[in-house]
Length: 158
Image 1 (cartoon, rainbow, N blue to C red):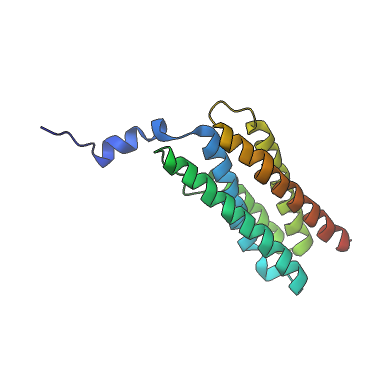
Image 2 (image 1 turned 180 degrees about the vertical axis):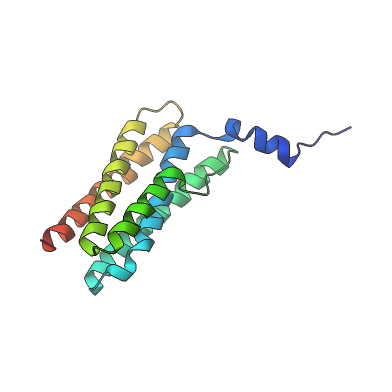
């Protein structure tokens, strides 16, 4: 007789089906996607919108990459940004009253955090060599580029 795992059993063992390092990366990337979507109405110029949309699209690509990596390994991909996303949304909501400069500052802080997370994962035993190479060749350069663009935008707001 075949045995099937029930949804309840799957839910109770879900923690066994997660790569904690990829999970942390994915939560951060989802939070970034949500954060960039949150501030579009604050942006005034087409150039600023284009810059933020480009950064947003690169975060969307990262979300898809890391989800696919988990699926390839038969693990459950994260669907929500978790606590980090809630914190980012709360900060952006509070700064929404202040304006674009405050929102850009929060985005810059998020990019800084993302860069530190990626640097900490370069030697992770939970990541395979291809994933670690992706971090070094794609993720970290993107984060650095995002930080540069946000710093430029912030300097123009002073």
